[in-house]
Image (cartoon, rainbow, N blue to C red; front, top):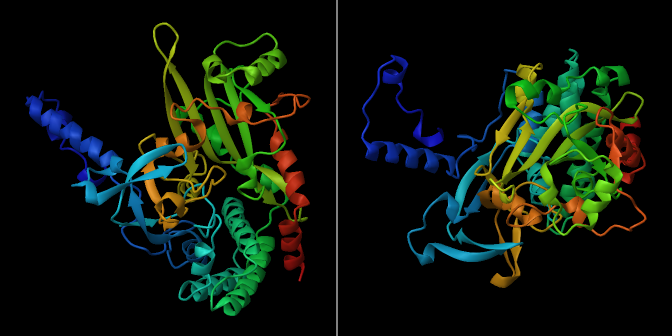
Length: 457
């Protein structure tokens, strides 16, 4: 229940039938609703290392994770997280497809980072996240922890190594992109960046698994369905179709092709001819009217001991939109959910899915622009004298509306312009065809070749 705690249940658990006035029930319902929309939901109490990779928070791996992912910063919030006392307490701000009331006051939030995000945020079109880790005290904390991990003699488990390699690989790509700084201390920042990149690349190599070890990692999505009631995306006969239109996907370029974005649709009824059905969807003004649900599963890639990029069985995130219909089969709404992988949960129970579920009311951050899929971005407001606003917290539904329209029925795969000679293809969900395509692309990328050259030094 978040801030308000768990309601007393002694009477209920004793099997007695309580008599509760209606006004009390209304108050409890209001409290629960308010707790769900508290801007502090998910925020840590303190900015300190967590027990992510082991129980010992002083473990070098936990120190690395803290330096890369855990951060306290000021935010502004939309009025869905509270009623502002007067008009002076908020202002109207244009946020991509909508305009919302945003607080003038800033609030403090501490993000733990144990979810499906990249490190060193905010990093979209800015260097705040990178500069933060190249500045004391985080710089010394990170470099000390990286060196300790390199010197470590004990062998970590395969799942630990896979997750940490993924974290470090992401950090390498974010750092590699920042090749200059417009700051007085630019020379020092570049020197520190070079040292961190070298340490990170060497540790990425040390953690590499064999191809067989990667194949043997937990298939966390398969494990999740019985407990979390997630859709059976990868099962034959479940009604889901994995599709591919154009070769480029923004979700993949946003992660520098370290993850593959796999798109699934579920038609209202199974078509006899899938190819004709998909072409019909592409020409339709609103494809969502012919679908029951759509899903985006993000699959992690890893680097094996031979230095090759290969798909892993790990699904790091799932975005799900289900289209609700009335008695006459007309669309009446869209349910949105997101599931992010928690390293801590998966490591504590590798047989589980490891997911944390976020519903439409969960706190999320407004993207800076349409192609910004990063975390906690600063937002430029040209309408407010070019003001650069701190990260803006809104409900997850509002973030999704930035790309998928206010009713969440816009399907980017069918709305982006594609040459008509490029057909929409169906993929075999039991295989990792999309991940193989992305892995081959990453293998040739400049930042990957740079990583390989660093770990060979």
